[in-house]
Image (cartoon, rainbow, N blue to C red; front, side, top):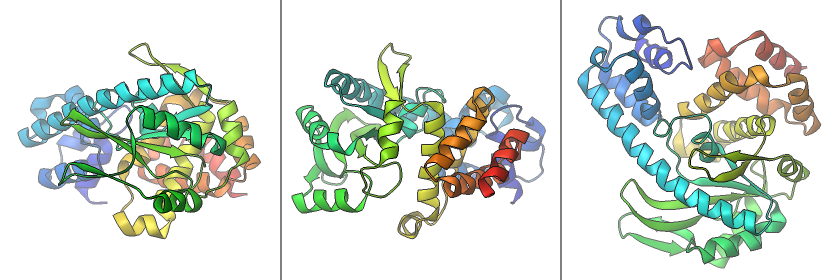
Length: 320
């Protein structure tokens, strides 16, 4: 790690940021730091820390850039929340088992609005519900297709493309709708019917959805998500998928820091109140040890303050 990367990690710590480690090092390259924060999609989160430390302590370009990113992400999140509420109400009305995943839920539970950006709205459903959910989204104006940012058009997928996605991945082809919001030109919805990347109608999805929880959002609306145990497992599997599968790595060539921070913050916020014996039972029940082990090794190496005796013990048991 170079000193700029160390400064970034210190700045993004969950709590007890050491201001001196961030600000007192000589000859820090703030251009590199700002580029890193932006590329890894953590600039909005960094701004929350900068506000806490004191904006006058930072180079002005760092402050103003992270501030604008935070504000634009806030606007984008509020637009996504508008659609999350609409979709959630329709799914609840139709008695369809479902759970909102990843950034969709973390933006409403773990982070302040503006701290994190989401590309799309992720929803987990049973495979048997795909036809009904597709019908609901189409009635709301969503098109199963891809948006062209140059022509401002949505190009609808062919039946062959839709079938290929369902038969080779754990999710349907994406749904998209145009908005009048410059910071969220489209709202994209990914319908997942698998916890991993395989197109199976798995027992684990049914069990996870049977144990989901209803969350009251800041705006008074209700959305379903997985419970904390299953949310943690899903985040780890998603991280493994994006970090270990060759076809995904070939597209990005890096491991995104924001995905590691999602799990790191989740651990710091919730693990003290979780039953780790039960968590281990859940992991072993579905034979997910290697995915969780892989993820925890990454997270604890990048953020050592996460390596509590509880996490160390969990890693040991996952390796056995």
